[in-house]
Amino acid sequence: MTYDFPAKGQRGPVKLIFYSGDKHLPPDDITRGPVGSTGCLVVGTEGTLSAGLWNTDCNVRLKGASGFQDANQPEVARIARTQPRIDTEVLKWDPKLAAKGERPRWSRVNNSHMFEWVLACAGDAKSYSPFEIGARITEVGMLGVLAFRMQKPIIWDAENRQAVGLPEADTIIDPKPSTDRFLPC
Image (cartoon, rainbow, N blue to C red):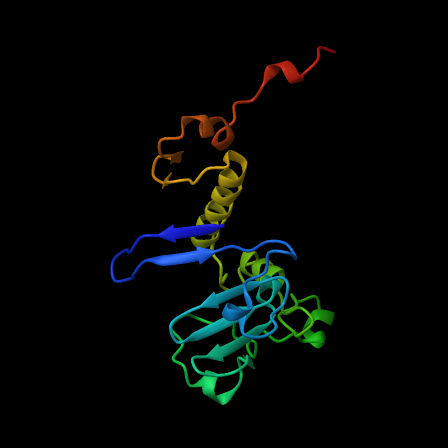
């Protein structure tokens, strides 16, 4: 599944390719080495990022390198961080506090996307995938499902929630409840 996003503001156009299934992995010339069978692979002009399912693993292959390295390698650590990161030192699990009934914080055991989200819901941490971003990501994914179901390319009008020039998709996008499914008691 290929998504093409036009340039916006200072950002150039973005092409996103979604691979799914064991028989539909990214080609070797893109990965140039083994990557997990689940997760995310971001290919940029300066390197490639491989993140496992729920972003639990992070490996980077910088431009010109032969293989992936852990994100804590010195070459990777020198790259300027433009987005906030989870502060695992601040969010450490403290069994003594937990024993007193205080909320657990963070640990390698609980170092997960779901645990971080629960902490954000409890007001203990900032979510690193807030609804403003997560909702858009979900919308992109569902457009892929719509394209598969329709077996046609989709041009999406996000403001009006419509597939441009494809009125037959409306019943899938916004299905109306059917009253004939319910039998009288």
